[in-house]
Image 1 (tube, one colour):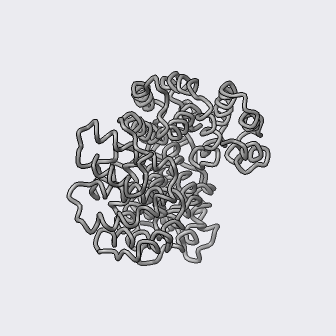
Image 2: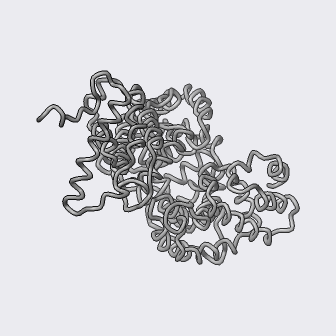
Length: 481
């Protein structure tokens, strides 16, 4: 090749001017090729100035990744080539695929059985998954959510990665779209994925939880250790306590468990039960009726014994309605957070309608019912139709009209749930959540409940996610029980 035809992307001296010139020289042959074969050239490649932002900062962004890992980081080579060419959508797809791969590897190193236990509680469609190969069946959003609940990523980093996932679904080559991503966006995505997924490690409290689960399954735990273990467990975040209780309950009810495992769970679980939420206790109690109507005698008897051990027989549900409804709600919630929810929610909403009886919403399913139905009615504000399944909306409106005082109180309490408020910075979910509050004012004359509802209705736009910390909302909520 002649000297004046060389394209040296990072020339000797590494000067900004030479790098920018090299990118420009690299760009023209591509444009010429597209024109030669009759393909469009406009709005295909990102502007050179946007590519320059990423390339100039690439070395700094990669500092978090050790050199021994970089040598095998083919996805970063693909990412860099795609950015240099100007195909940011392709670069984002490469980056996200590696992020999901890294999180799966983190799960395998941590505790796959625990992961699937949490996954099965998140959505019943995951209950029969158990092997490494089944990880691909978990949706990307649910994978992030399960990792958050397990403590593999914290709440803030979950939001960071969720943001990348949103752009991957709506602005990458993974799905057809016409949205654009800037150079600064790409740098943020790269840094977040590298720091909080690809090189992430669990904190010490999560590692200690893994050790406990290993010991429960493999060793006889002395009775004298039950109380210290129980007192240590209740220092974990509330969601992790609830998930651990559900995991140990599931293990306790599994057929053919060795006796020492059952003894370990029997000794530890009363402490965890006392620290768990009412929702989780009712969820376990609802399993009794489900196993009974299905003729699963072993699991029904194990559930009965577990409830006796933790003094929780008052939470026992004698029929399967609550458990069936919870499973359907969990599946609808999972579908709602997927990128194409706007045409997949309908069948789930229809199925939930068939599960409701004239007795109203079972207490064991009340919180989940209110949360999921209101989330789906409000939509996620993303993509087509603002993330609203218009065919399912008729069912959601019908369900909301059946809410009474108990459901209204659950609605108000949910504004302290970060998942419930996650999309309230977007216009459509914000407006529709206020519409729900207006509808619920018809359920009661309680002055405190209506003050709280009025605060939601009149709160400044697109910051409803912060209302639970506002004194105008907190004051009436002191009297809402």
